[in-house]
Length: 276
Image (cartoon, rainbow, N blue to C red; front, side):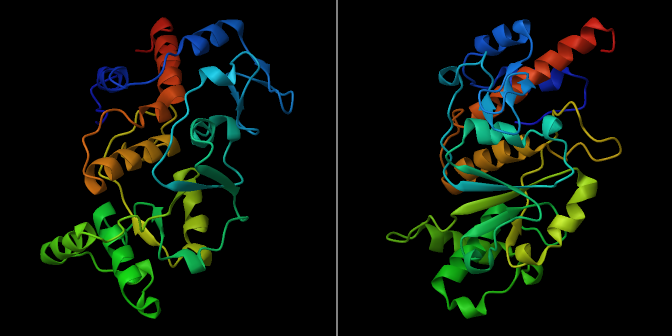
């Protein structure tokens, strides 16, 4: 699944195929306008992006809950505009599995590097399979010999095949991966966070290349730069298909429950204004 650059039609085709829960409650709330957050009483549309709860016009029982196979930490840049970030979608929809942190207040992963990966595209990033192969090596060998991700070479085909066999061997616990870290910021703001020494020991993995559908895509940046919720969604799809080796039947589509609805609102508004 990926968006294309042939206008909005490719995006529409992707988002229309998602197996998301009924969005009637969002349509009703959109007609009513902004409503109060039940926790802080702020006026919001659909949900409060600081309390991570639906507003009073959107009953919690009408919002889907997504169960993720791994826990997620989202590290948010303090200057990232709350109302424009899609990270809140993950906390709202998978609240039991998602923890939000505002930089520089983040966990120290030093003792957890054998069970955590950082999702970030960079020169030292490896594929998801290779990243889990490194965790497998770490768990199967003396932990003192584990090297930080800046020293990880990309695995060649033979090595990767051997690691895959090791991971699939009977009696071996495949669930080495306990937590996935995502950075929520503009691309210009990521440098400070990614350079933080508390993240330096983590294996950095990159996603299979997709193109964003985000309506606030940053000018001048590649269309493969995903919004936070898109990155989380595609990671889960890749994990489901590549690591669990299962057919994907929309198990995590509801992560895009708010995203797909907002995309349609923006699209319709642009069409009405003659901008499409």
